[in-house]
Length: 127
Image (tube, rainbow, N blue to C red; front, top):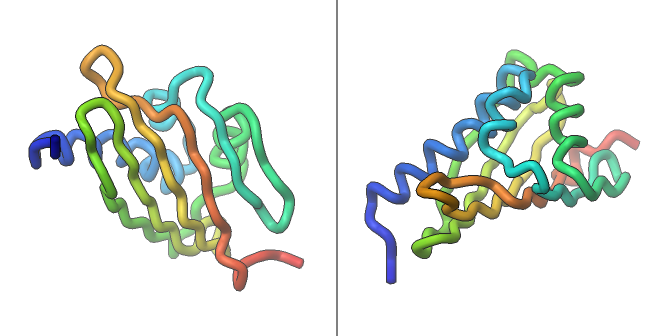
């Protein structure tokens, strides 16, 4: 059963915590979104990152987004207790474009992210 528009808005608001952390270079908002055991998978400048979401927090806290940073949230699907969100990022750290996929679960009435997988656009990989 498709969820209501209000539920899509709730998922978008949850994903905004991710964008706000990246934009401000402060992981505190994302820490409210991700579960403690959330996982991360993706390639950053050709190196595989995988494991604890703590690596994402480290990246956010050590690399400022930059003045040209832009992001867009697309709520791809919401199905009662699970949601998929795509976040497009441009110019993170002044140079990197990402496509992030966030997997959210509704837990105790709140949307929480359990996994983040991402792609770095190939034309922004530092060789």
